[in-house]
Image (cartoon, rainbow, N blue to C red; front, side, top):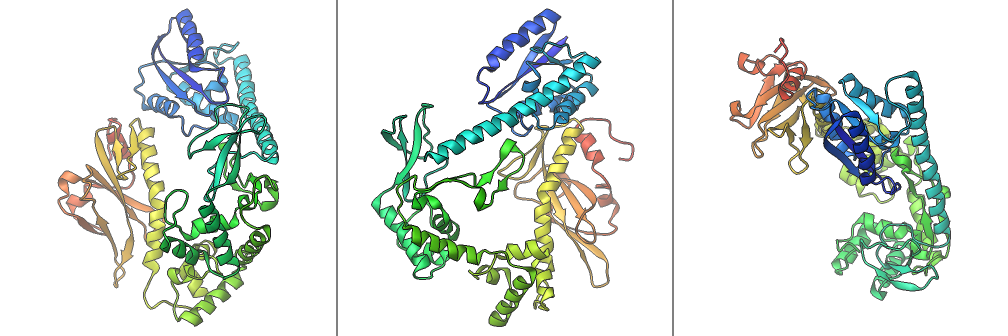
Length: 505
């Protein structure tokens, strides 16, 4: 019986090397008359999620294509299949294989995966244990990191401008400075921060003095540093954000701070409140006076405090009275207020915030909000189309350089969202701009509904028939264009997967 093998190794499981897994898998295959056609390998990949495990994703894509040339998948044990935090996720992926007539064999387990009640119970327990192992390991690793932070040792990350990383041995003796990208090689070695070159230290101290004593904003400080020819530790020009980062980081007063952000078990990134940070005060040599740092923090905290809706609107009224008009750029130039994106997040859009204070722009800017919403929706639409192709047995990959989608390694696809507009008479119109520069083989034009919130229908336009750059569509179009219109993309998915084309096409 033809079979494939899947092996995985993560950095916390060196004893489960892929070679050792394959020895067990090959012995299992030989004893049961299975022929291994090829091996899918994920080396150095966590089993917590399917993301990042390219080999398993490719394997599942073959299974779902309906054209797999194997009838069995050989895995060392349940944990190699995955340490999913939801045990049902591992069961789901196995069910997909089973539904395609492909059986998953766990070669190193003490039970036969034959669908019996006993094997199903053991698999469920094993899946839960695999997920629980990762949870326990995460707690232990985090506790160990916190302990090292409290002892004054640096836990990852670049040193930053004005500081340097130094490697020390288990007795605290310096072994040398670490360059960017270099890491310690011995488990007993540790990393600490030390002050960098005198010139960089003076620049950092000047930043604090200009911010606290001279009342200069971060943007003004950045412009001054750039004019003097100073560059960041990444050899880039200074920006408001990079200056702000220097002015708010406790490492410049010698504190070792950890756990500002949590991303435990690769589930969800959480920004922790300041009281939850793990810190060791005075772990390093300070290059900024503590009183100066605390004063800078007070200024930042006062500026970034939580504004109520009414306070934000009052501030908007004050800007309008002072400037005579409003725009996102004008709001962003106010150093004592949140950015225009904060207004969009709080009120849904800048236009709605304007209406709440009775301000009507001279021009109709609603198209800007619609275009912004369409830009945000475009990646999701692309992802849905890619998933649809894969779900129907094809392959689809987005090319990051061009944003085109390559289907089955045979043709390229451009996906365009066409906003809906209304004429004076109330008729609906759509303008489609075809990508003539990259020349995709096919363009899928998604016509949005009247309020530009959901797709209305789809036009599948081959480039061989489109010799112009723009296309104007009405509610009803000519017979030639209607031949390309579909209410769903099932026809396209069937075409991409070489399946039988639906009769509706």
